[in-house]
Length: 477
Ligand code: URA
Image (cartoon, rainbow, N blue to C red; front, side, top):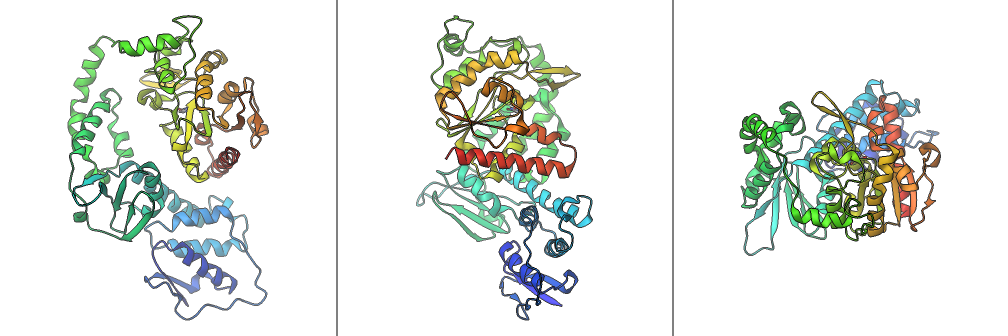
């Protein structure tokens, strides 16, 4: 029996070194016991000698990616499971593609749970101001992640709050950002986190103002925001009363006459909307585009949409991502790619190493085209006429942002960006010159990835999508 001792619960490098040594010494999984003792001197009884003539092996990339995630799972079985799969890959090179294999399925499940925990952490960490007059302004958050994802997620917060000093305290580990570097220290106690700060009142006021009683779906809400996270969310104590009041508020909203857009917006938009004059002024700032799409009448889609959704992101982004049209959630929130397709896009950007905030994300069509099915609003693909009418806004965004590379996500976006239909499968991974000096790249739409039914095919499509984003990012320099 071989005893392997890793330095920490998430010591992937240690696991990889040990697994490689065991594998080349032909030690089968049932002869290995994996432990974590904080010392990390891997083999208590010395490193096993490689077996003479043992074939060299390389673990496939999809296995390594899954294992890097799975090791963050709290389950005790993970280290042995990872080694078992690695061992079997020696004689079953296509094992990772057999999604029904119990070991592969379990490994995928662990990795998926870890991904979910990472997403929840990104969504539910709430910082509080640490009041210490002798220290520069610092924020701290207490969080209990379902799995050991803190160090994986920390770079996301460092990018998002680059100018803010903060600490995230968890029972496993604490991470600290001083504006330049991320540091790590041992886990903490909830008592170490500041109890509350005055910013929470603002946050609660904001949350109450964006809470839309007409769209309330309690089951969905609890699925998205499980109760285990409520303890650390300042807005959580508002939720019961908001739910209780939702029915009356909805009735009052329905009874109210429609509100007029603010005069200033109408005036500003009139300057840039074709309705005001056929010789419309081309918008020269992103604010003008944002105001303009609110009162745009270039096609009829404005009638059924809640609002126009303009692009968002870095003002001089090197990379512009163009989707089809806002979905149900984007229409309500007024921002592009914040719903399910947006989550896929976020995951793919992260996998491609592209910070979303350094890109500019927009759509070919700025209003949500849909049809009503009962209370549900079902997405309806925009016609070529809608794409043509809305190119005015996309062209304006292109001229203002001046990206080096424009990625068309799906066929509608490609039609808008290139002015003609583009076969995606045949044109992906190519840099196509556009008249405005930018290069164009075509890839799949993230919603397509959501619709692929088979898990294996879905993972493959996702990998291609990430590959295309990486290609575009590299092209953008
Ligand atoms: N799909 C899109 O094409 N754009 C969005 O903003 C959301 C979903």
